Length: 460
Image (tube, rainbow, N blue to C red; front, side):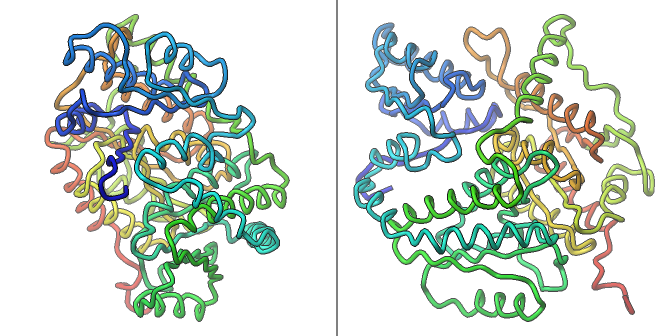
């Protein structure tokens, strides 16, 4: 955000630990809450809306207007009616013909940007500077490369552009991952030598226009090894407006080359329907239909077929051991987001990639259900999946819902697991017991030990 302007924090999880961690550093009564939902009924958004409305009323003692809330939604949604009836400070009504993942340059992106001090007019003016022919050519090139087997679009961001990959990940995965086709966006994967990558890669260097010898040498090595590299340069933060438009066009052209509709998401509803069924079973019987673990160790429990050396980490290593491109590894972490978890999951990605040359992705649940979740189920049947869940040390109720955030998160994880199994995807679930970070460290260290890097094999 701009100096002196409010700081923007995005809360896109149902993890109770993450929600409480944020709440504990907020002054709720002086926080502006922006409730953003195109449909107005997104379960995560609606649950967080209920919770922070109730917390605001608890703290202020008021039962009237919620004038520290703003809504961004489509016309005539439940959220719009709630905002107007509940005394919200403002409701921004978005054009209904713009899909959610294409909405960075609509109220969904521009309202938070303006509130945090961004000169919105200048940002939009940058879109006029886009060379449309170049955008169309890039989309055609990436689509053709995908048809030739290079369908793992790997982002290499310069320092300062790290978060752009998360937006590109959703845009590309949800738009192209359907009908057994699609590009797999690879965001925030630890860098490796050219030999660590398969011949299914295309690299996209997101350049800040500043000389960086380390990145330059990486790009040169990748090109020398025969990997295609695309570079886009952003010399001014306001040029992000141009890049948003560029990649929306590029993605639409890629979909045209693949002969699919870039604007629908036919498989997102599967996990939602499964989540609803899991919650109904929970309400009826008081327990989650997760089944019994096939292996139980002190801090790890395995759900799925045990293999390898008969341990949890050995079974996970065996899941990936013989996989090779064009397959890819997808780690679905229903854990509290955080720097230490980021580091441990990056180690796990590197161990898998360096031993198999698989492209690797990581998504925190349930956030990824609205991005790579569509690709996992509707895209190429080449994913190999590891779901990681954990006990919630604390839990909080969702006001008026008759359930807690922890129960909702668990139902979402089980619903998505069912959707993958129903489609015959290779998938294991590992549940972390006790201290989540310590158990994750045990899992990662064990898999690292069980997966020998190819470079360590003499004569390979």
